[in-house]
Image 1 (cartoon, rainbow, N blue to C red):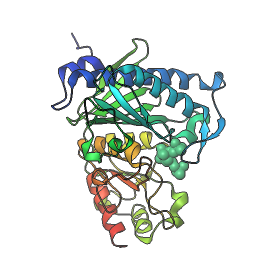
Image 2 (cartoon, rainbow, N blue to C red; image 1 turned 180 degrees about the horizontal axis):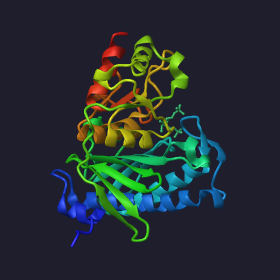
Image 3 (cartoon, rainbow, N blue to C red; image 1 turned 135 degrees about the vertical axis):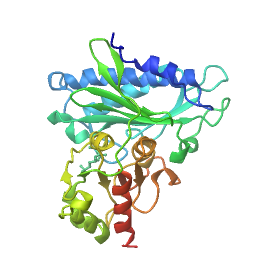
Amino acid sequence: MTQQPLTLEQFLVAHPPAPPGDPNALAALFSAIGLIGKSLSRDLRLAGLLNILGTTGETNVQGEAVKKLDEIANETFVKVLQQSGVACALASEEMEKPVIVSGQGRRQAPYMVLFDPLDGSSNTDVNMPLGSIFSIVAARSANQPPVEGDLLTRGTGQAAAGYLLFGPSTMLVFTTRAGVHGFTLDPGLGEYLLSHEAIRIPARGKVYAANEGNYHKWPAGTRRYLDSLKQQDKATGRPYSGRYSGCLVADVHRILLGGGIYLYPGEIAKPEGKLRLLYEANPMALVVEEAGGKASTGTKRILDVEPTKLHQRVPLIIGSRDDVAEAETSMQADR
Ligand code: AFP
C-alpha cells in the first residue's frame, strides 16, 4: 500500500530542529504560518470577487502604494502570530515599527518573526504568482521583552526561514537549518503534505531572472554578466532563458528546483538595490544556501551582512553556486 505523504505536523515531529531550537515552539510557529497560508490562499483565490483588489490610498514605510491585499496579508500575519503564543516580536515590510507581543506573565515567547507578508504586489490585480517570506530568529532573552535592536540579527543567526508560494497550488517551503523541504496544501484536507523532501539546487542552471528594464542603470560589470548569459557557449549551457515574474518567491522557487540565477543588483544611483535584507534577502538566502546554492550582494555573502536598520535594502544575487560565483567575478571586476 502506498504511503500517505507526511503532513506538516507529522514531519516536524519526525524531524525536530536541533538544539537550541525549541521543537514544540517551532512546530507551533510553523502551524501558525501554515494557517496564515491557508487564509491568504483563500483570499487570493477569490480576490477578484471580493472587492479586495487595488490600492488602499495609503503609502507604506517604503513609500510604496499599499495594495488592499498587502494590508490583508499583513493583518493576517500579525493576528495569527500574536495568538500563536510563541512569537514575542513581529517586524514587517508594511510596518515602520515592530510589534512587541507581551509575554505570558514574566516569560517571553521564544521567537521573533520578520516577514514580507505579500511579495510581488505588482501581481495582485492580474492573477499572477504571489508569495510571503518569513525569517525566524530566537528571542535574545526569556525574561526581558525584546527591543527593536534585537531584530537586527545577521542572517547566519536565523533559526529558520522560508516562504509561502501562491501559484497554481499553495506551497510552504522552509528550512530549520537541516535541509529544505516543500509542502503542498491540499485544500480538500486542509493539510500541507510533504511534496518536495530535501530539495537540492543544481550547481548550475539555464535560467536567469532579472528586470532588464533597469539594464542601463547597472554598473558595467553587471551589464557584462547579463550580456554573457545571452552568448552562445555550449560549455556553460548558454544562452540561458529569461524568466522574470515580478515575484521574488516565484522566481527563486523555480531556480531552487531547476537551477539558475536571480538578480536584483545595485544600480549606479542606488548601490543598495531594492530588496530588504532582514525579511527578503536573509530568509531566501538561508533557504538557498541550505539547498546547496549561494546568495550574495555581488561582493559579499548575504548572510554575513551586518544589519544596521530594520528596513535596510541590499542587492541580491541568488541561485546556483556556479552561476552566482560567475556573476560575483564579473561584478567585482568593476571595483
Ligand atoms: P513588490 O512586492 O513591491 O511588488 O516588490 C516585489 C519585489 O520585492 C520582488 O518580489 C520582485 O522580484 C521585485 O521586487 C520586482 O521589482 P521590479 O518591479 O522593480 O522588477
